[in-house]
Length: 636
Image (cartoon, rainbow, N blue to C red; front, side, top):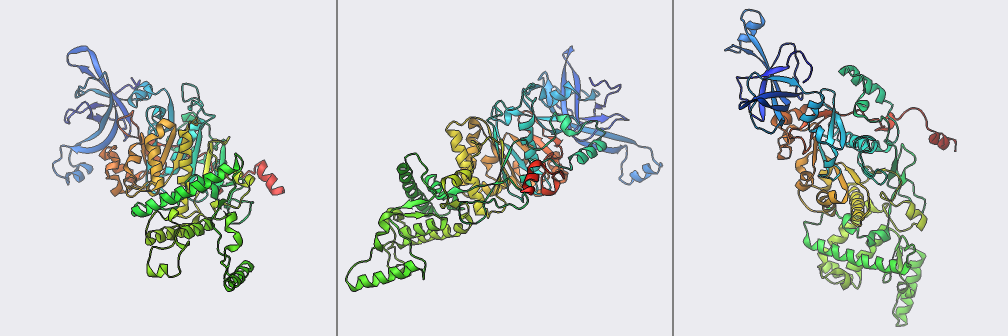
């Protein structure tokens, strides 16, 4: 099979050999390690012409002295005072039998290393019509994922777990994304993606500005891959072995929140990178697209508050829909126009003094004050704070007496808006919205013109670029959840309307966005993606430190499971039972760049390493050579 003059070992007769696992004795002069792939052929007891071939992965290796009764005898053997033989044995988990006759291998059967076609059979690669390079095995051979279980053909979604900063979760997610978009021969000599021109990827950057440089080459790549080749005696680097070009992401768009400055000129809030587009939502879009729920971190604990939120959200939608109808297909404006509201003037302003004088004169003449009829003409809400003021007016202040709040009564507020909720619930609603105001003010703007609003729209599916990196690392947790939730819901709804092409979403910190406990709008969106995204072409590549703290259905619907280094307590959780006990124990000592990979095709997880990133992952890794674009920026 392998061409070796002697077998790697022979099946032990002193340990049980079953159709699913067996031990074998390693022959002198041979080396067997964890994760090595082997094959055995055993004879059929009923026919000398037929046999069964076993393929498997080594999951335990041991050495011990034979014939010793006491532990202290080890010293005597080492000093040459007592004779003893050394037993070098390995345990194999069977991954495949051909034909599927569940016979055990016989003691003494020869064990051979699985190479070439035997290796492909052992890991079911021979049945993969579309292969996604997932890294390298311990032997240096390529490891593949069945693309059918990634792109939604037979399954979808990838879930990655591991300790932050050590498990290289984001790096591995980006490597898979890079292979998806840059493998030009993985589908029988054709590109992996059946429609690569319409495929898009959305990556949320949650830590520093690291992912804002993935379109630039990594100056450390050559040295890191050369060091790997030297350590492993390889003649090709890992990208060449996997058949991938080594370089940065070829088609990228970068986005970041704007600086908190007024006016139409929006500037992305980044420090070390140019060419980044700021993103915002208009106040009109906030109301028309029902985004209010994403401004609340968690309302599930108060059912009355949730009911009020839904009611207010519907009222805002009705205002925005009327505004859109009046625009008759044109730009409806960034602000929200409300017909029955005039905000109180700033204390000490000219308007405040004029109104006070007019009110005093009117009272002396027995006339009522109506704000000079301003409210009848409507008012433009141009800031998020204006919207909060308006909602406070409609829920609490309209027709309220000054002593209402002190007496704890339910008076005040527009009955069409209050939904018959008591004043305490309405006050809690406004308080929470006030708390969100400082975090969302620069993301939700009503003071933009049509051109500025269009340029700042986060349009992933309509872009000509393939990979879109959205930076949220500088935002507060509430604002991060707002951006992620609103963006994913908009994309999911677009896919429901029939937008073609695959959409790959890379999202870290799933334990924050889809926790095991509680409910929120963003958790509902992620559950929709996990459960229905496959049929719509929305693929989630999610990551988290602890899968046990993530909603079970989000993790459970991932066809591909990946684990880097894990905490010892976390590794014992039920979410990792797809790994044998010996593999789970090893996850606590995995080095960065090493992952345990499990997919439906292969019954046993395999250990893989993946190449050093060919794209810069931080500013200092960028190639020192200056591009023409940067030169032009310096000259101007």
